[in-house]
Picture 1 (cartoon, helix red, strand yellow):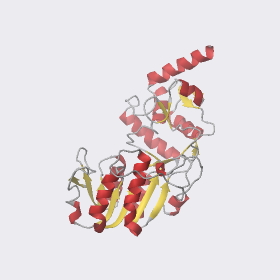
Picture 2: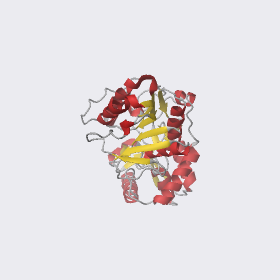
Picture 3: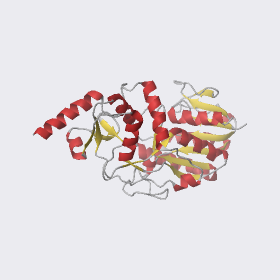
Picture 4: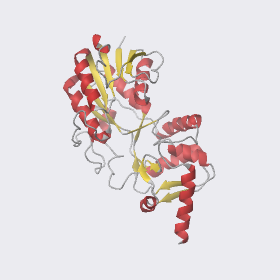
Length: 329
């Protein structure tokens, strides 16, 4: 039986990876603070990665596979120091955010990455992930690094993708504001496709670095697919970027935003080259399948629940009123 250690395993992405290993028949141990449960069938070791001796218990044995997704460089450095000699294979889940430029569509894994953050320093996400990649680099030919794009799917706590099918479903026959989609693209990876790749790559002893991304798709097609899946019959109101900015609507994520919408100077962010991922066995399911999974999950969690990204329905109605007032002069 394959012995797998998940550093985490109780959050969304790491939990799906843990579940994928369990489904494969592995013996899975999750090391986490214990605030949330590990997947059924996994053994939970409670430890705080910020504290001393966090890895003492799990460093007493050998592991066929260690998985880490942390964006805290110190966590990754300490884990490698404690477990390097105990791991046959190591998987690190990074991000396409490590790339220094998002201006070049179709860039592959050879593109320059940002300067890594110094360990222990508070820094931005991209530099922290780059520092984590630097830390696991000492594992050499035992290492697989996945750089996913936007991870989506059931249970997504960020609301960046689920906002759209949920908004179209909740609006029903009412209007929905979208960013003017002309020239914009979206690129996502279903969380379970990412988990499947991490597991299968490790099981084969694969090593290397890949952009774990799906096909780059025009944003207009993504929004149309979400609308059709939701059965929305109301008006769709595309708004140019300048007008959205004038009304304090943000890009990409966070409160009062329009998710998936990116600035014009980032055409490469949603169009990374995924050929190495597919050549290494990566699979990305068809977009309508992911949308259907996400919509079912959104209905189960509540279409009108508070969200971490997007416009509230009240903000959207107020925005529509303000845009109409602008048009009247």
